[in-house]
Image 1 (cartoon, rainbow, N blue to C red):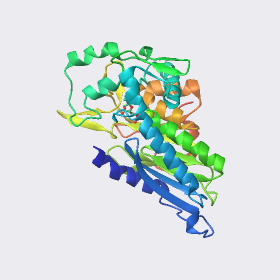
Image 2 (cartoon, rainbow, N blue to C red):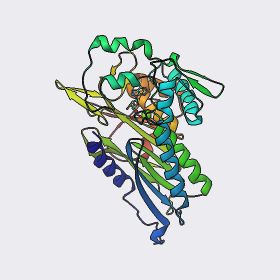
Image 3 (cartoon, rainbow, N blue to C red):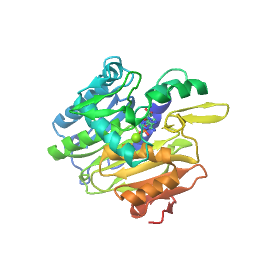
Length: 337
Ligand code: AMP
Ligand code: MG
């Protein structure tokens, strides 16, 4: 799966950053610096403007590698694996993320659930063999999962034996926030493609908007919509085309419905959330994919702190009114406020 995803992410990054390589007015090429790394199980492409000494790029890479080491659910020596084995951690990143996940989970009727790792593994995600599990085996995991298993207090996270956490739904958004904060502090701009998470920071040297693309779930080298974003924004997509397997003509994707303990099935192919904060955008994109379009729109009406694009299997593309003037290319339907 990794081999399949890599070229697609590269294509996405090229689309996102492949225009206006030089700032307008012919500023020297050294004003633009680019790096690609593999971290948090995905390709990450970083493009910075104005990092003339390369110091900020080096710091961002250090942050991303630190989070990779801390939050990996597969590495034997990550802080997350230590928590999943021992039941307790005081790791500051994990405590912060667990507290945040609990909040968003409560706000989304439990659609975001970071305790599904044993269930994901039973379906074969994160392993070499994907398979539809035996229903009894799946049900046997039910008393290990659920956000009520999580205790966050006094700067520590505790979980009972057998419960395991997974920050796959929000770690990249958090990583983008930390990178953005560092870039803003250093006074530089840029665009980061952390897998499907796009983070824009500041203003391009030529003052033009950032352009991002929403992938076609059936052909990830194509874009159904392109949007212009101004300033620092997070745009995060969750979809059934990112990691999946097909058995007996049924597609099973990596996003699980906590109620059924099974991959989300429905008419939705992807949801993209645009918000000020990466962590919120990432948490919500996963939760909105679980909720489906109607419940997701209801949540958008209640909250008002994000914009979104829903791509349906029948080809319809629904956008929140705040994105209407941001569409550069592609047709769409606008949701009623
Ligand atoms: P994303 O690509 O941000 O939507 O996150 C998907 C990843 O989050 C999966 O690969 C799993 O590691 C994990 N995950 C799957 N289903 C859920 C869920 N309902 N809530 C939270 N995390 C999930
Ligand atoms: Mg997410």
